[in-house]
Amino acid sequence: MAAKASAFSDANRVKIMCMLAKKETCACNILEYIGVTQPTLSYHMKLLIESGLVRARREGKWTFYSLIGEEFERFATSVNEIIACNIGDFPDMDCMSDECAKKMKEETGL
Image 1 (cartoon, rainbow, N blue to C red):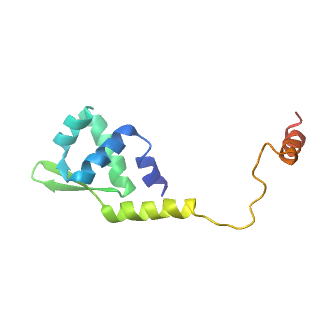
Image 2 (cartoon, rainbow, N blue to C red):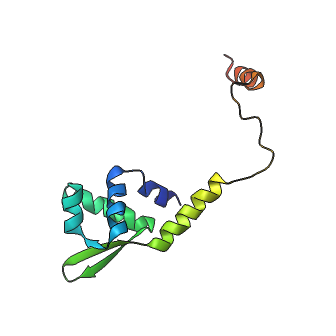
C-alpha cells in the first residue's frame, strides 16, 4: 500500500495517471504532455509500475502504458476503510485539553 500511496506523492505522477485514466498511450505522448526529460519520465514510470497501478506493454520499439483499474479500486477501498475505521474507545484526542497539556508537560519537562 505504501508504494501505491507514494505514486500519488508527485504532481507529475498524478498527471501521468490522469492521462492514463483516459486511454493507454506511449511514452512519447506522456513526455510531450508532462514536459520532462526522458530519464525523468523513465524514473516516474518505473515507480508507477512498481506501485502496481500502471502496466507497460511493448510493441516493437514502443512502450505503451495503461492504468490497472482493479488495483486503483483496491487502493481506493483500502483508503476508504481507513477513513471509516471504527476501533471503538478512542482516547481523548483533543490535545488542547487540560489533561493532555498536563501529560505533555510531565513528559517533556516544559
